[in-house]
Length: 262
Ligand SMILES: Cc1cc2nc3c(=O)[nH]c(=O)nc-3n(C[C@H](O)[C@H](O)[C@H](O)COP(=O)(O)OP(=O)(O)OC[C@H]3O[C@@H](n4cnc5c(N)ncnc54)[C@H](O)[C@@H]3O)c2cc1C
Image 1 (cartoon, helix red, strand yellow):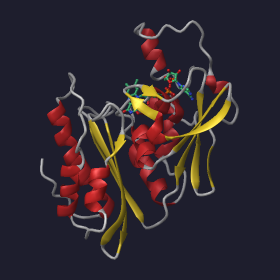
Image 2 (tube, helix red, strand yellow):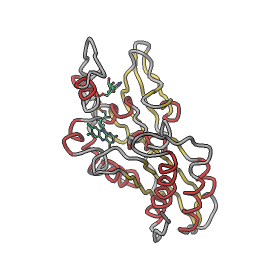
Image 3 (cartoon, helix red, strand yellow):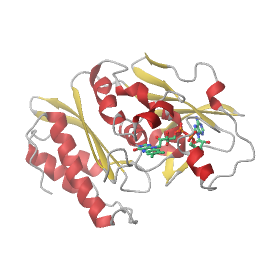
Image 4 (cartoon, helix red, strand yellow):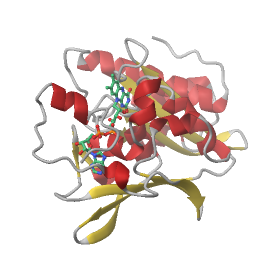
């Protein structure tokens, strides 16, 4: 299936993919709709990345999406690449995959047996591997529109602008009376699939906001996680990056002065 072609066509150029037939999803009318309904941002699978360079909704999610979108590759790639294509491809360092896991998005998939919703945390199984069955397509992604009171931060590190991140962190917190009432921390690029760091979230809940707290959450963020080791970075380097990025993304979310070490 061909969406934006920004992953599939390079794979075909390198003969890593040799499909006998290409089905062009771009012909499906209305598949790039982006709108808010019932407190959810509903993103058609064919919505291009560039669409999110500007706010597509109000509130914290509307402010977070452009921060993340601008880290995806370069403008020409963002003009063609699609939200649904990124989820279907499931690169562990994809910004949209990490966001979907962080916010417990619903991925609406459709196949010969009809439509079914899949929670983002069940959708990403491993490196480039999803819960999509043969013949199924991603139709829509539903993200909760965060209420005012939530604030979010995003950090990633890549060697060159436009490269996939070696590690990235999404931090969303709800602060009440100076304490963290709720938190969602998502990490990409470090494990075989993006994940929510429940260990970091547990450190944060109920505690008074401070950069020292955020640094502790960063230290706890990778508990029990096997970090990837490849020719881009060692596992130890990725772990250290994630520690710092989580602390800084939290600092951005809360507006505290960032003093995370490393
Ligand atoms: C130089 C470069 C840098 C990049 N940097 C980043 C980056 O920093 N962050 C990032 O997230 N991405 C990055 N990308 C990838 C880019 O975001 C792609 O657009 C994305 O991964 C795939 O989306 P696509 O629409 O282009 O999919 P395609 O290339 O058309 O398809 C990719 C795969 O997904 C399948 N597929 C596509 N859509 C669907 C669907 N709706 N349902 C089921 N299967 C589907 C296809 O069959 C194919 O197997 C980069 C790409 C390049 C070339």
